[in-house]
Length: 193
Ligand code: SF4
Ligand code: URA
Image (tube, rainbow, N blue to C red; front, side, top):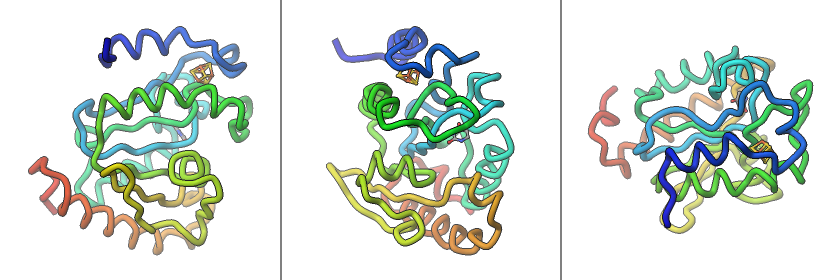
């Protein structure tokens, strides 16, 4: 039986496949449009996300919303998920074992969505999704195509909050994402600004 979004989310909500499950207030499954052509992938929930059960609702999320708005996108036009669905303690990086335990959920989400484009937010997502030795400082904004899906990575919005000097490069990357979306996405609402 192929997954449905509802069944997948219900199953995921009960997950205890790694120790992060023991510390969560809320599991953060994902948010946005379940027929979107663009998938954004972050790292894992922070405090606000753990409290609310939604991805990117804290300060980094506000910046992410602003970044999307710059290129005519919002949560009705993309789907947003994370590498790990439960918050790592004190926002430490998710461990490799935790990432591996959680990855099947993201794979099943990706199989349901069948995105045309995947945008990794930050190093961790890029290393899981694009390649293990991905160097975010050198390789952000570069594109690769795999199994018909275009993939790129940009700096994580949290990194852009800490280091405003990374923002001009990210603006260039965002404009390239917009151009690629205009080229390959068929949902007409993308072709605005
Ligand atoms: Fe399951 Fe992922 Fe949560 Fe670990 S982080 S308990 S694998 S949903
Ligand atoms: N940072 C992430 O990587 N994901 C979230 O959902 C929130 C902050």
